[in-house]
Length: 362
Ligand SMILES: *Cc1c(COP(=O)(O)O)cnc(C)c1O
Image (cartoon, rainbow, N blue to C red; front, side):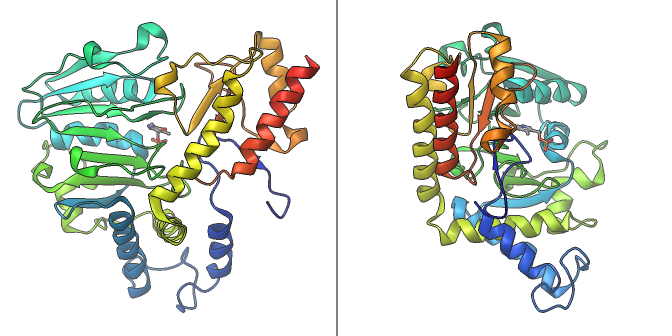
């Protein structure tokens, strides 16, 4: 780490790779020989066209997105897609299945209810305070649904899907905001994958949508023009001014991913990082984690001490050690370490060293 930077365990917006930040700095005054900053550039210019097309190509290459999928950059965050998905995909039976495994999947379900004839609760782990991902036995799937929606990584609770639910011919739609490009994913098993970019890919401001072509049809008439997937495909995500800077950052981050070995390489690093934390958690009893072992997230690790006072003291002591954002989400309490792609292994090792010192002192 350089320039007085610290280990930022924020759940999002979160750390970006240092080489990418330096590249942004280097190009900030004069981007691509244009004599202007990307911040000032027309989205219709040749230089910008290369940037957005490059970002799309990179996403396709890094995630090995099959040819029959479109890649869009949209406005409104993942939360915007909570509304746009039912409007665009809920047009046949008007029924969709939602599995609620945490806060964001609950939000998506609630939003879908406004627009669908029927949003069905196809499974939930709420009764157990979302400490696990619903098992196949806990699911009730509807064969007549237009789609099945899941949240792949539960950012607040620290759980993640380890199996792909079998929805038959019903397209599976996954919110991968907090796990996108953290490991290889077989895109062909999904009807659509979407993500707010501010966890693993870029600063906040754009939503990535990867969607199978046959699912792009005329949406509900009430659909805002900017969330009409069909129109956005026709306009290459440029129906209006796109969020130019975050898309540019997606391009740089995916360039960097390609240079550093792609998803296999980053997945290996992420597994190592998560293992450092979980192995320590499993080896002692000062800290506890309530997440079911099989469903542990590689991106967001939640834990607590035996009391709220100690949790508070732990969080209060973070700045001195060069950390930030270790406080758990208010829905869960305790602590949460978000260790996305850009968090170096050294940051996780330093955190475990602090945890050990803190436990010894209390
Ligand atoms: C952060 C997050 C969201 C919310 O994203 P916005 O872009 O802020 O709307 C949704 N889903 C998941 C899984 C998240 O981690």
